[in-house]
Length: 357
Image (tube, rainbow, N blue to C red; front, side, top):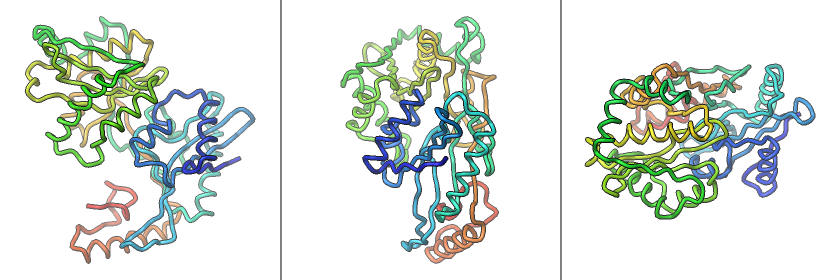
């Protein structure tokens, strides 16, 4: 049975939190605080719940957004999962056939409610199983396995080992803050992060305020770790790590450019890996780059050269006729405004009618 919970209402929010508790999930990407922090709030946020059997459940949160072109509401909607690793999450007893029934029930609901497309950012643990749309291998990600310390050290690229040794010679120190993280520790991270975003000309969506960081970290102390690297007691590099029961995720961080030559980035990553091992974690998800096998991806891969996986996004068109009409409207609007045109064959963005550039 498929149920819909509106998470921008008190009742729906309470139901979702209760369902997560019953699921015993510690995955940070499904917490309301994370979704609210990273994906732009709770407006239009819903969650599907599906019970294949008593005490078995599949959950999937996401946004049902109205499709608006040239400031005119089309009367149609789409489903977009929150930013990060998302898609369905389930109890341990759910099997492939259950997922097949889940996607079928979801597609039926979509068609009955004028949903034109679905876009899902799947996780790296195979939850695209039995997906009724197209599972698109969007980019490569590093999903590092935490192993014995000596074997881990030997598995690093030579450059990582070299840079770590240099950091040691430079007398870099690190601190890892987990639970009861103090305001000044969050502020050290924030100052470095903001400086890094300014230097890199990051998009506005990456500029969170200090109060937003503080609120999120304090309210989710079980899911947050801050690792900060110091040189002569000066914080020079810092990263916010998200934590689940057996996996840690590289989230947001930065480094002061004046200290690049001391190799704090490699030092930080190795220290985080050691912390993860000591705390019983199995994986360190570093993610991917901005482009296919770019410099950022290659840097991440240098820590786990053999642990590269595909990151899948789900793309589904429920009403091809309406989809083509919406793309045509967006094409005409962008042309009239002197913007780049849209081409229905373009596979680099989905759904095409939401492409801004």
